[in-house]
Length: 388
Image 1 (cartoon, rainbow, N blue to C red):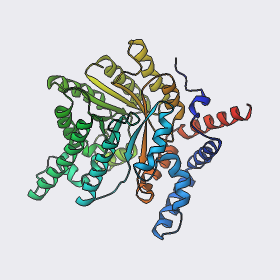
Image 2: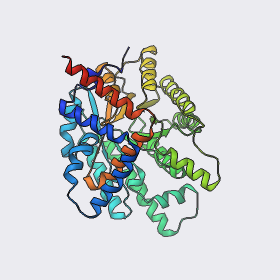
Image 3: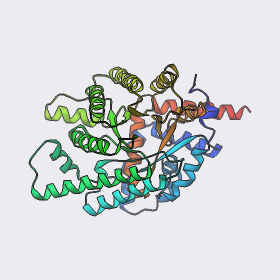
Image 4: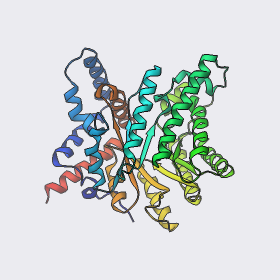
């Protein structure tokens, strides 16, 4: 049985210098005060064009990102491949609003798809619909509000961008994840994704929808999605995550006086996540699953399900995924045991990727036990190396 306690395997790709940098980074992001002050100071320094780009690139950027361009990520991709771990190139530029920017982002995502073509080191591509569409438009469509003629044309362009990306994925045979986002635009994203799956997933899983299990209605949504895929003759691609917008979701529900879409507690999320894993494994002939999780229990649970159901560890419908720079004890130990594993490797110009990096730091601070777990494992490995 796979174990996540083996730090020699977990940090086999890290030099002493890498390990020390990771130690101090997690020490710092473990402090709520430091993260808040650091966020303000960084934004202030960038606004004044102070020369801090080099410092950011050598520290937090180096730990959590693959590079500023696709080509710069090649070294990271090759290093991960040495340990049997794939790379998911994640263009992490956020907050754009113009049609020109949306077209440029779509073009960049297609470039990641083409990079993955015939490259076994890059098993998937990924994108967020808000990277290629205006949030307010997606929300209006979600609310089934009447669109102006101009907005109808705008949404048609969104559809065409999504279709171009999925078509490129189909032509190259590189599956693509469409990320989940806020609940008040998710129906729009689900609608687009279902259309793409029905079109491109007839022979194999090319397009994957993402289900956030921190929502209490998503286990049922998974079952409905499976029924729809079966009725319409396509393979359901699913990336299963717990979710990334919990506090924002709760605050909005409270402010606008509607029932919160969020599970009542963590135990409910954990229960539904494992139930969703069960469901996917039971229907693995018609569902392709990527378990995107940093949760040790769920990762172990899926590894046991695979073995209990006598499925191949490298079954093409079964993948584990974690973020680059986090949970190496899960990724490296699973890959070492023969399971399919990939890392999300964010990239993009430092200034543009900074919102992503700040969010990563904030999430590490807010997720109970995440930073302390990373730190304890790093310290354990430092101690092991010292005793050699």
